[in-house]
Image: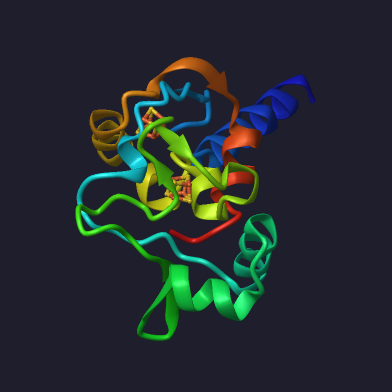
Length: 154
Ligand code: SF4
Ligand code: SF4
């Protein structure tokens, strides 16, 4: 019986290992406020209707006005506008931070724990190279990482 139980434990551990992602022991992240993820090369900050409504509310516009001024259509999706240099329209260059931080989109809230960054160790390494806060500082446990990762598919 003892042998059978230890074998079952071993099989259980094997199954768990197979299901555990490579970052099961956690990952480090602590934002250095460099602003790199909000500036530079052109990109997309996807926004849903509820995010548009929240952003509009924060800056005192109605949603239609907000969308006309700050949102661009990309196919069937919507993204925040950028300045010609690629900086997000809500990046405050003087304060070096987000001017709509309280209502920033989920995409911004969940960085760097995106599906695409967590695909494998190589993609995480690349993320660490572009974001100085990734791979350093506070350790985020698996549960916390997964709760961020699953908020949005990106
Ligand atoms: S690139 Fe990374 S460290 Fe820099 S502001 Fe963005 S999240 Fe923070
Ligand atoms: S909304 Fe704020 S956090 Fe998101 S990219 Fe723009 S400036 Fe950065």
